[in-house]
Length: 433
Ligand SMILES: Cc1ncc(COP(=O)(O)O)c(C=O)c1O
Image (cartoon, rainbow, N blue to C red; front, side, top):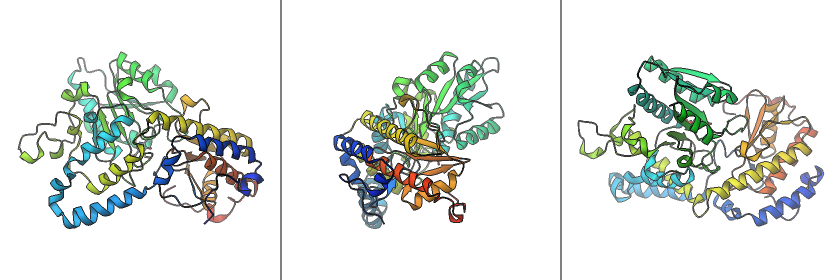
């Protein structure tokens, strides 16, 4: 394992790549960074440059301690008493209250539950039922989305369309969404940040246009939450979903969230209604009465271990405005793009260069993207690959430093210069890339 990256002396890989000046500028930026102290909360190995927080956020020391407590004391000793004594039963609402300020929502507008895919089904189903109830002449049957959307969003929409027998999914180019938004559209389903390129949709403008034609919106914020200054209230969004295992660092498979705007609560029904979404689950009422707020979008018993990890992970955001996180994300990505242009031969930056048009990731195109990604991982720069030819890096501002950006580009330049990727072991496909 390489030694941890020192902040005062540029390592030899950096000087060899001619990035010595870039190193000192980055070290200065780190010295001024108001978020710099957050990094020590995370368990990151010395020398490792972790640029995959957009896929699986890093672990925090406090999460390890919390899980030990919940498993050993609360579950081991407290047993079923812990639903009350440790307030396990209030966990989804407590976690919702921590996610809410990150997305411009009130806590009662957020349900923390299930996977993003399942929440997409519930959000789309609820939007569709609402539209269906107001259909006059049988029009308005389209779920409109774009062809850059994450596959699960399309799979879920198509599954729902098959179930209803009435909805149809229309898929257009990202730039063509506006021109296809018309009175035929029941629901606009868009992921704010393109998982592959990092391109950002103008969510406020698209939401406003959707409302002009009477469509409801379902936003997928999986690559936005915890890193961009999302303001669902200001966008006047209707419904949204998002992952918590990426920038929120909730852990692998951590429960996702669903946002439902308060003005719609009374009219939105959960198509997967279950007892935990009931107004009084422990009344064991044979008649279903939904909870008054977004809690109606939960269904079964909350996953206590995963929620405990997520609840503690979210402490890393306390005391800082999400705007500061967003600002640092843009500075890190800008630094990476500038250095990639200067030092990486044979790669093309796919991510938009205007800060307001991108998320916290930078995607590079290279014909051997898979092997390059694997070689970089061996050089302790962890990013990931998206087919066919994208190397993708995510910049989680709570633990990525400006010097890490310089170091990553220097190691990348070295991998390209030496063609280190050109070895059979880097071409063997692994299941998760
Ligand atoms: C944009 C987007 N939506 C949804 C998902 C899937 O979320 P889940 O696995 O929680 O269903 C992902 C996973 O990476 C994603 O990137």
